[in-house]
Length: 400
View 1: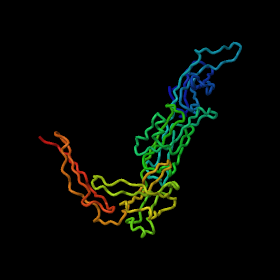
View 2: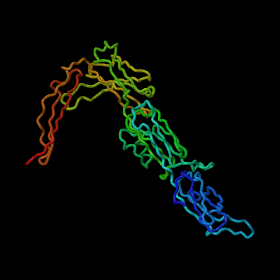
View 3: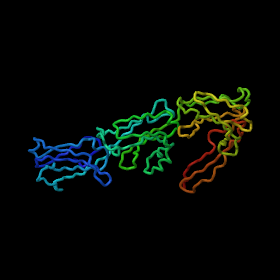
View 4: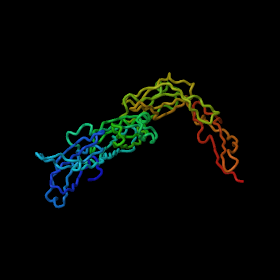
């Protein structure tokens, strides 16, 4: 018999070489803890055609190998009951050990690249290609393995999706969005992952994990890359905030979104931008939160009243915020509007370049830089900050 076998992968063939014409008994046991538990015992009668070769061939049904582990096959003479019969000695019993390995699963997910809230479902197909038979009827529940198929959100780095032996670390770095129990070693199982599970851009992992933390149990994973949906469209219906009364008493925001967003989770937030600091190399980025409104599914516009706005700020930014099934929120689209009407003549202009800084090295190679400010003129009334380059860095090599 072979030294190893794969669970549920087929019958185990055994060749018995014996010069005896007595019937034999074959017993299969599995090691449970420190005790070998018998699984089946059956007689084997030598075939007439095999007697000349002293060879008997038998097999153990595939279904008895329902799980991986250490098994034992015992072969002994069938006892003959009678007044002169005696017990068999150990020399009349042959025991062989058998290493039964778990079959390896395959997990295929389609498609592997989708947009958030995909229109077509994401499908995960789990198979155990080596499995060809079910466990025998009446097998102990403890002999049937159990797994969990889990969908995890790993963020924007695929490295966060790597499995770890530390379950605590896994739970802290992953967000479990969906789980379903898998019992046994199915030939093929299909799982439909709903649209709303993929509400954030980034990397997702589908893990098959055994319920028992035994490292010998099989496990596998598949991955999905998700980008923001093109169905998110966002526009502020105004060229400037003031004069506000010409906009029907407020500013209207128009938007579109995928059909399966979560009900009453998305919203539009209003921020105000402070005036630019023209002495800074960076554009103004400080925003102050003003207000927000929830989006009801089926709604495609919101109205922000005029009393929310003031000329203290130079610009107002409307941000479409999407909330995923995990509760995490993300800014999906943004549209900023100047507080007062502006023209191209009022946008900022670059001032002269500064002197070069000293070289960072006195030998081999180095860098030097120069900068300019957006102050000639400074942007007015919320006009655009200067564009293109504000800092120039030069790499060069010094020659003797």
